[in-house]
Image (cartoon, rainbow, N blue to C red):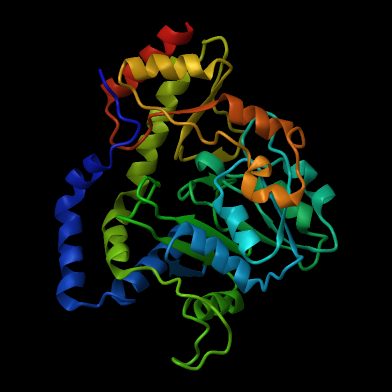
Length: 368
């Protein structure tokens, strides 16, 4: 039995009757920029995350960039973050002329090791940017404790993969000054293209986000700062609004798949399953295992038509684009080892029970 790594067509088929009317409404009214769908989505997701304000933006990357711009990040400033993640956080830091300062990941997990944050803080530190990787919150109690005696250091959360995840009863995106989410199609709440949002409880920061997202204009055509065009498209907002009532069921289905994998693969020698400490409630945007002989497992899955993916094959500190930072292989051994061992198995809300059983059977054949 072939099993896709991800199949977006299944979700659309299930929700087509809910999505098409709102898309038609945008096209018929031609309110393609801003409008009620954007406003309603911002309000609904702010309530979902448990914050006062939300600003819809053009992508998850632009959510990060806008948040750092709103901090007035300047060349020479530093931002503490993880070397094991997608390129967007570091790319956003570098685009503003600032410097990422990396902290290695947890010994048993994939998020940054918060016990080393204080050692990474310095006179030039302006922010700490934890990644809620693969749908599991970073240890936000330790992150917030690490900066409590560092005035002027903000926490900007990257919850691109973690909308719906929580830690100690609080939603990802509600801990720091800002939380940045992506609506890339394969995310827990996915658009039909790019989109993102910034969450914040800080009213002044919210106003600054709105200003910079619209070319720094207040009022229109009177530009008090140099911002950008970071608006969330109305068509994407309409599609997301139709999907939002299903977010809880999407997350619960992912958790059910993960629970099945956890049980079915628990006794396999040489396979490390994702783990989370008490207080964490992940959403499993990816289900990522560690395996020493990854190539063998991938080949076995491919032979049976089963998809898989490597998130991520190379750590950020060794990327050619970041050579100027001066990091070398060996600087962050946990992140480097993860890049050699991680493999994501199929997990999406519409994955069928028989398909996940086929995945588990194939993994057991390869390693059992």
